[in-house]
Image 1: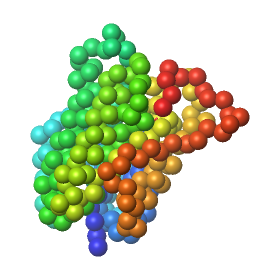
Image 2: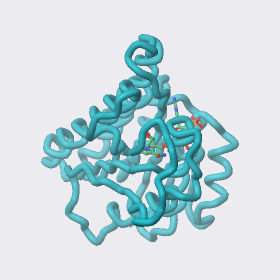
Image 3: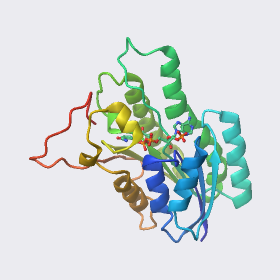
Image 4: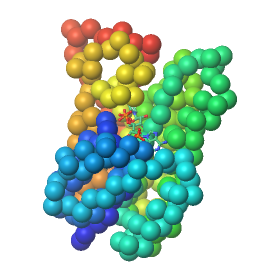
Length: 246
Ligand SMILES: NC(=O)c1ccc[n+]([C@@H]2O[C@H](COP(=O)([O-])OP(=O)(O)OC[C@H]3O[C@@H](n4cnc5c(N)ncnc54)[C@H](OP(=O)(O)O)[C@@H]3O)[C@@H](O)[C@H]2O)c1
């Protein structure tokens, strides 16, 4: 059956790797990629399986009404939305005294409110046919991260949202997954740990593979769990210095 999948944060990093990995599958025909940077989305589309129907939209997810309209159009065009993968995220690591209310707001708008908004609109279609939603949280959301207050607490919110929605939406045949990656070599990680050597940590493709398996038809029964995706550091491999590790 030809399925439709929306992926946010697809212009680079983990979102791009997930899009590439998902595009290898036979069951999904239509991909809709969303983030603000058109050139990044274009590059992601180029790296994906060229046999798929791929559309992309340069859109700020915190423009809630525009996102609602877009999801509505997608639902009408394809009849339903089978998968929603919420990857987009923002981090500006600071202590409580350094965090302004403006930055607190921005973190929550991108990391929490935008997921609520796009998920709500998607569920209006998905509840008729069933489907799968995957949210990207972080290991920072599951334990204390002094100095990362806004980011870590916003990721904790995603973990709970995913667990709550997993139960709330089960009656519609909607499965809700949550993954919490550890340290992964992306632009966002550079903000969190500027001195770290990206070659020593997990790569976005590793996360892409895990998501591909989780959302496959083989029926991995892990919805509702907070699934940690982390590369083990070898015993003799020294951890790179960073403000915090995840
Ligand atoms: N890297 C890690 O170590 C790590 C660990 C745990 C969790 N994560 C999570 O993984 C997810 C992906 O991050 P990443 O590491 O791949 O970082 P990244 O390479 O910086 O990617 C972030 C993505 O989010 C998009 N985005 C940010 N703000 C947006 C907005 N307002 N509207 C639309 N799109 C927006 C960016 O696209 P545009 O700039 O084009 O809009 C980009 O595609 C995030 O949720 C992050 O918290 C990362």
